[in-house]
Image (cartoon, rainbow over all chains, first blue to last red; front, side, top):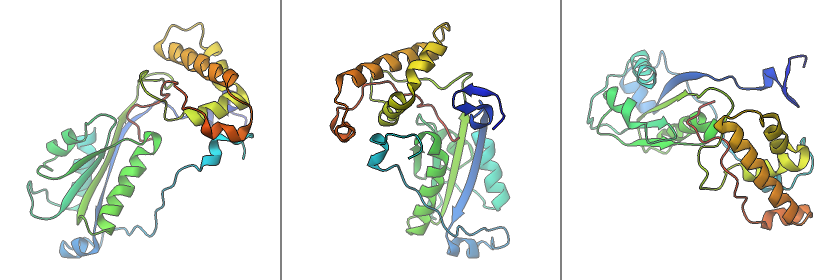
Length: 65
Length: 174
C-alpha cells in the first residue's frame, strides 16, 4: 500500500512491468501418460475454470461492485 | 524464446517428437499474429493442427484451457500449450484504429467513474509518443459518447458500441 503511485489509484506493485518471456506445458491423456511411462513426472490437473465478465460490468456505478 | 520453451517442455516431459505422427497431437500456441506455426515447426512439431490464440492478458491461460479441453474431450492425446511475449517499451497503447475496442464497455465505466482516459491523456499530453496520441484520441471519443448518451445506467446496454481504439492488442500472456 505504500508503494509509489504510478497513476491513481494504481501503485507500482499493482502494475505489470514490461517483460519478455515464454512458457510451455504439455498436456496428455491418462492413456498417453501410461503408454509412455510418464507417471513419475506427470501432474494431474484436478480442476480448471474459465469465465468472463457478466453484462453488469458495463452498468455498474462503483469501481468495487 | 518460444522455440526454446517448447523444446525444453518436450525434453522435460521425455516425449520424442515425431513429425507427422499417427498419434493424435495438437499444438496450441499463443500469439496475436499467426505466429504459432513458427516455433511449432522449428521444434519439429509438423503435420499437426496449430492454433493461434489471442485473448489479451488471458491468452496463455486460454491456450492451457483449450489444450485441457482437447485432451478431456478425447480430441487429442498430447497437446503442447505454448505462450510467448516480447513487450514494447512503455505503456500499452492501441494498435488498431479501424475497429472497435474490445474493452470499450469497461473503458466507458472507467471514464464515467474516474475520468480515467481523459486524465491519462492529460498526463501524457506533453509526450509525443504514439501511445500518448492514442490515449488522447481514446479519451476524446469516450468523452464525446458520454456527453451524447442518456444517463440511465440501464440504457448503457443498448448503446452502440464505442468506436474507441483498442488499448491493448499485442501478443500477451501476462
